[in-house]
Amino acid sequence: MSALSTILFGLVLSSASLAPVVKASTPLVRSYEGSTFFDRWDYFGSYDNTTNGDVTYANESVADASPELTYITSSNTAIIKVDNTSTVAYNYKRNSVKITSQDSYDVGSVWVLDAVHLPYGCSVWPAFWSYGKGATWPQQGEIDTIEGVNMGYSNQMALHTEDGCAITTSSSAYTGTVNDTSCYYEDNDNSGCAITDTNYKSYGSEFATAGGGVFVTELSTEGISIWFFTRSNIPSAISNANTSIDTSNLGTPSAFYSSTGCDISKFFGSQSLVFDITLCGDWAGQSSILSSTGCSALTGTNTCYTTYVLDSSNYDTAYFEINSLKVYSNGTSSSSSSSNTTSAAVPVLGSISSEILGPRTIILSTIFIVSVVLSTL
Ligand SMILES: *[C@@H]1O[C@H](CO)[C@@H](O)[C@H](O)[C@H]1NC(C)=O
Ligand SMILES: *[C@@H]1O[C@H](CO)[C@@H](O)[C@H](O)[C@H]1NC(C)=O
Ligand SMILES: *[C@@H]1O[C@H](CO)[C@@H](O)[C@H](O)[C@H]1NC(C)=O
Ligand SMILES: *[C@@H]1O[C@H](CO)[C@@H](O)[C@H](O)[C@H]1NC(C)=O
Ligand SMILES: *[C@@H]1O[C@H](CO)[C@@H](O)[C@H](O)[C@H]1NC(C)=O
Ligand SMILES: *[C@@H]1O[C@H](CO)[C@@H](O)[C@H](O)[C@H]1NC(C)=O
Ligand SMILES: *[C@@H]1O[C@H](CO)[C@@H](O)[C@H](O)[C@H]1NC(C)=O
Image (cartoon, rainbow, N blue to C red):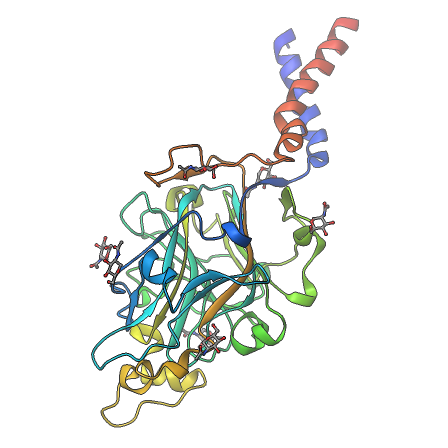
């Protein structure tokens, strides 16, 4: 063995034995909350052309004018809602909101949504999701963290991808119920590899009654995980994740998509985050779906639109109320906003200390230890 290979051999052994000491944490890069919640989003500003829903997504000036559809409450929560006051004339769409983050977050990121209310009600179809804006959909993947229709009953998560990504791991890796294993958008009418949460507090009136909760989405090379914790059950690893998050002790996630069935780096790119609420459309608006999710089936020639959308009083619970959305990331995030060319990743206190404790520093000190040992021989 040459001196160099002895050093390299020692280096491998030393880093392996030191590895468990490294805290598996990911630094906070952005927090959307309070008065600045809506600062870095693009408003869709036109008809919902993807789910055939009966809404017009407001532009920013419409959403800011009365009746306000996006605003901050006196208790510092952010509201994203359907217009539940205006009378809509027959054949016109109701105003709602779809906003997309100007920043996108690469593989190696975790986003944590803390909400006290999710939109629900007959004909209501909200989602909190992400997709790779930098390519033709779905080449960089789509992750649906929250999706529900009508009165419930629990949250449905899913991925949508190109061909070759599927759920292959056993059901012990997640607590949810699998609806479909293939994530390929051409399979199962593009319903994706959906997993339904077994906890009814993850959506609808039960979510609200429980005081809401927290959804954690982790996009890492090992897989995509989604956890849900009801308000009374939020682990300290989340409530204390002020400068970085360690997901290693959060327990079995509701949904897990392992890299063994889906090469994450191949099917997923930098994700932009999206909130939207549509009405009726391809999923929520079907008569059979309405009747299986707590609403009356459609009668006679009535459509979902004529039954619900014209009456504003159907939408009093059709709103997100959000405490915060925090993004943690090892990677560099990118911003598509032409009005802001500064680096999107906001350095926060703590990313510095995680850098000091990071693997690179440990490898350097290992080299130092190995060379000291060699020189004393
Ligand atoms: C960020 O890097 C740390 C240290 O390598 C790692 O433990 C953690 O899993 C990474 N986070 C993500 C979301 O991949
Ligand atoms: C939907 O609207 C967006 C933004 O205006 C546009 O880029 C996209 O091509 C439209 N999609 C369809 C299917 O019409
Ligand atoms: C916003 O939408 C409204 C209603 O469609 C339209 O009248 C207005 O010109 C739009 N404003 C901007 C800035 O695009
Ligand atoms: C998915 O599975 C759950 C649990 O079995 C079921 O309640 C739900 O209706 C299914 N969703 C769809 C869209 O088929
Ligand atoms: C994190 O912030 C919360 C709220 O400000 C605070 O109660 C908690 O003590 C902080 N935790 C740590 C570890 O700093
Ligand atoms: C509309 O919804 C809000 C919650 O977003 C609620 O406070 C209000 O009472 C509802 N109804 C009317 C007529 O504004
Ligand atoms: C660009 O973003 C940075 C970081 O969030 C912010 O401090 C700055 O004010 C923004 N500049 C403009 C022109 O919006």
